[in-house]
Image 1 (cartoon, helix red, strand yellow):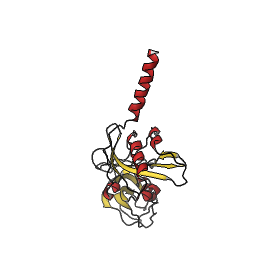
Image 2: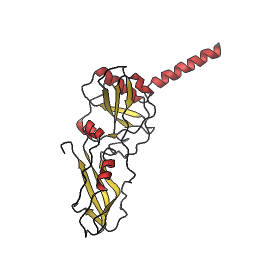
Image 3: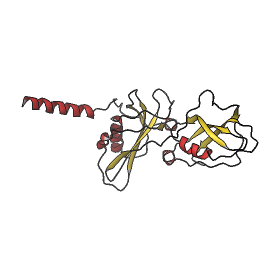
Image 4: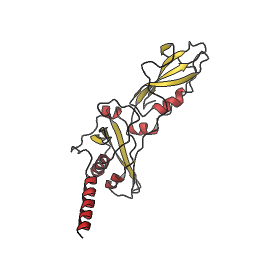
Length: 240
């Protein structure tokens, strides 16, 4: 009986500990300023979604969602910075903030330079009572440029393409109202063909690299271009 008592006590203590947020939430959580949202990368993936049980159960046909901006500790635990005010019921936002605070994320693949630990957008949604965490978009296998692109000679800006493929605006970035730009270093040949070499920059990182790479890989430049490494800037604007 004594052993059973301590086993049950230990189990209850473990459950109580698991229910505590990893990093305490500072209430009230402020609303995110537009410039903060614009600088945030999509959050990395999370494998522990049990905390979503904190979201209110609903069989509504209307999907519910809430989003927050977090920074990450060295252990990739979220620190709630602000909540994106979208006019949803306060109760759902509070539950979403508490659920997100209990998550542990994987190591970010996009290098976010928005302050220590980066700045990441996390969105949770529910439909017919089924909750989920929005997953980050995949990133292409292309490195960030080092001090030298490895392509010689080096030229600052590419000539105007004779054939340009318009990139697809990523749906998640469009839904979140995120704008940005990506700078790619291209190895341009005298034939006008080009091969992307590396990403010089992406702001904010993580949203637009994949669609940029798909588009610029199809660019064609004027024949007779002096071969070398050139920068190409692709911008994503909501009004485009």
